[in-house]
Image (cartoon, rainbow, N blue to C red; front, top):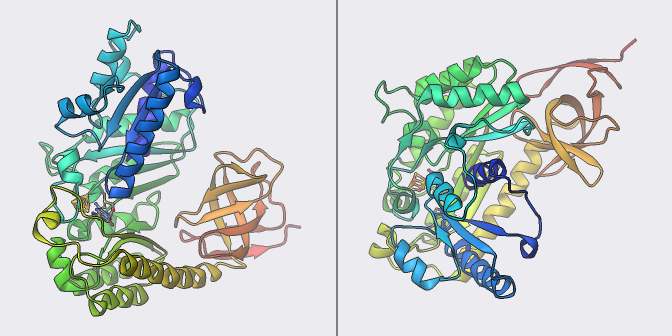
Length: 439
Ligand code: SAM
Ligand code: SF4
């Protein structure tokens, strides 16, 4: 979400005539987009604000703007604490950014917020479709900082995606803190499957993703839509957070471990090739060794493709920080986090090794250290070498080496569409359906 918002800020600033620079000390303007979901992220914000204060003491003309979840309702207090910051604006409050620019004497066209993105777009794009969250999980600061859920109208989103596709974008990721509750606040109450169906018809687009889904909002209608819409990738991000029912209840997640398992069964029944990713918190207040073991059991039972694990971080103002003591020691949290990571590395290593010798379809996103990289529909990161310009192309790659985190392979059909080492047809899940040497 922050990445999507940073891109949008950069886009508006470019329309106003600014150019990006990789070095803050040569900038006229620095926009700091912040995350405070865990204390460590907030500490980083404070550290960066101190660093920028140092730069400003050498260059008093530097303007510093701060946005993201660090900016809450206490803007006056923030202004008092950080007088070197020129503007605090809440996430998505681009009107305030533009008013500030106007005050600085920058010419700001009236239409700037509705101007389409630049013609040279990346192959993949992040599109925010619903802001905020209504859930109030007991540990989470997001609803306090980003407010209640607010969906963008279907046609506004589709128009944006159509424009991006016309400019060359091949894949969009629809974003929301709780993306699968999309639409309930709109007059016609469309849901995410309606939006996916509309997006699926956009000419030129080859892939659609969405994240993050809440288990309690994962409807059968949505699962069926993912199964039937050909451009919607078979990849679902579905955080479960903890394997113990009492911890889930204290977290206010709204489901039990059994209900989560049942949901995964249903999803796998309808979309057999689905890749699943999840989020886990270790060391929630009161989490015993036995309760933590149930998280490990769920991980072993489900075998996710990817797991994002975090140590519980008490966030001031949240229900958990008011109600429970942060009584799991940092050392225990770290040890549990390491155990989740080790188990998941093992599982992902096995899952990925099954792709060895198979051919997958990769949408190429860029080049790093002499190798092109991109992702499969199932969100696996793949590296390969080619002398052609592959950016934005769908390339078929025969997988050679695998690790828990990425795959390496060779081009089967190159970026000009000409087969190189063979001819293949690739299934929705990337499984090889046939590979024959070209005559
Ligand atoms: N809405 C999604 C969901 O239903 O879980 C996730 C969005 S949340 C902002 C991203 C992740 O941050 C969560 O899945 C959770 O694992 C982690 N997180 C949120 N608050 C946290 C906290 N206080 N301590 C540790 N991790 C936290
Ligand atoms: Fe936070 Fe996600 Fe829970 Fe919303 S659903 S409160 S964003 S963890």
